[in-house]
Image 1: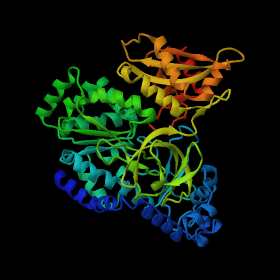
Image 2: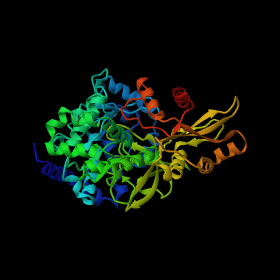
Image 3: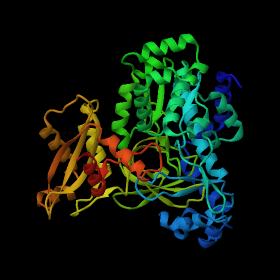
Image 4: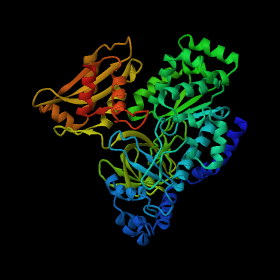
Length: 530
């Protein structure tokens, strides 16, 4: 196996071309993006989708807009079903090598077709991100890394046409040469990710704890890393006594770990050469990322940007800036929320909020992602974004049109000073009597914590919700009763997550919790804790 430092150097060297391309074209985003669109159309004009939408007659962006409407999943799904049955040349001339399944938190699960072109687009984004990170924190590439890319514990299966759903291990997201390098870089063997939950955590932590020189960790959700931390705290003795740890470590390392784990610890006590962890930090992940930071000690968190099963939108590039558009990856359009007008990447305004519309090498054309971003700044022609939430998460009983974006903003503002006290926060509506609804701000506190001035907190929270004129009017007219606060019993979130897993309502081991719950979800929670 290749020495880890050498493997890191070679890997970075293979990524440099994409990074140089990203920097070189940062002032010509419009030209590069239109070139990508032309390539998609030219390569796929003879597909079923290309013939239906007359790709042969598309020569300009205006032609593309005229011939291909903005698509939601219902428009894409019939084509995907044909691919799943084994048909080829449906959305792309390139063969679909596998499907990836979305988490299904807001809607039913979707099967996203993956081609070699789409994988290359993801790899381009990762290349730019890693090279940028190396310039900012070169120590990240001196040791091994932990990457959690695909969900753990998911069972592998195939479609009726024999196409795999998911991957056997995470290195399949990269080309064979990079996969070989990653096998030397990864602190935890990729196959461990397919173990069942208890064994997965036990084995993963044994490998991680064995490596005192661990220098980077990347995961999707801070909730996943918090779950790992909780497992470690509950099972310290068992992990220290495990055969896996014994095989991987020296006596001195085990003694050092035993001393640290005997008392209160943060992650920087375990991994002294780990400078940064990457995970989501925006929208519904905000509060959990704050909890995670408290467990990390001096280890910093780098916001991952906006990556989804369907596409990559933004990647962290410059320190102190929000993530930037990964403009080398796909073709992007942006629908402004206030006006519904559609703009290209170089036309976006700072402060405006847009829904991302994507066209990718996997065969999604003008697909409305429902992901909402706010433009925070520009680097040359490249916009920088803050992820706000999902467009389709909205609560509207009497015309209040309350969105998860508004709820996330209120949580970030009001709970900034309470983040070390609070385990879970969400908003949900319930009936106050046979006629009227009201919203309830639900708070689960950490053990042995309490909140003072709850009345003041409630007032501040609702004042932010009042910035939505529809909500304010509904309360003013008495159509909605004023906001209430409910303190939930300790362990409520854990009970709820266990319940939805056991009832087949969650597709992944890590559940991305919404901050605006439906009335039915809230009713389930109340029944669980009653």
